[in-house]
Image 1 (cartoon, helix red, strand yellow):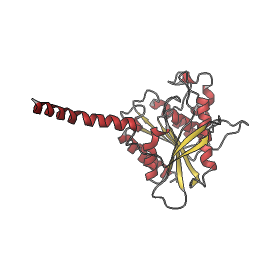
Image 2 (image 1 turned 180 degrees about the horizontal axis):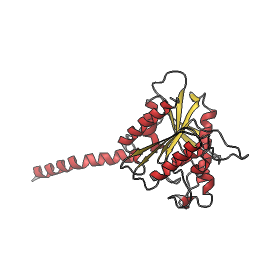
Image 3 (image 1 turned 90 degrees about the vertical axis):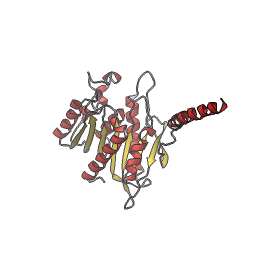
Image 4 (image 1 turned 30 degrees about the vertical axis):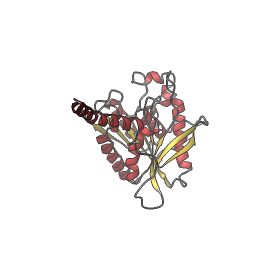
Length: 279
């Protein structure tokens, strides 16, 4: 009887231990890639914010291009670590990558204007400190997913307006993963910005100075329909800009975080930046 009991215990452990180990790894983020450095920049509110920095590897020369990324989460959720794997991918290919924290709204609603001001402050920090960070200041691209894609697209259209009403400096390129580019009435996220939507809706500020743009979206995305992506690119091109739209068949919102699509979209980004002479 004792022998059978111990056989049972051993069998149970063989089944349970892998599952427990998997849960522990997920909870403790033991397999997460880690940034090379966490840099503090001051958001527009004066609150300290973090830039998770992944330094370019296998570089040639004293400087390298940079990609500043903003995570998604409806301007209320998420963290810089959400894009660690993406940044590690780009750093391995010779691009400095920074995943930025920014102001998140409370449960009562997002602070989109505050988030956009912080996104501007993060970009300005990279521009102002390019030499110390070994960044080529003419080759700083900005990107992000979902609401983070909104922040990137907004910077590309010159938002937010500074206090004198003059358009601010813009990134060299935009890398947009299913971005919230249209916040007009009847769009999925309009209710979050209903009182001031036009001042923060990238589509409604596209002009001839929009940087070259790569926009990637899933064909089954209910948050960013293909029609919205097509309208943004058509508006950019009508203004004299360049916008490359890539549609991933059968994929929905956030698809680029899946390992397969992280690689596929990452390769597309590297090819896009290279093709525009930025890498």
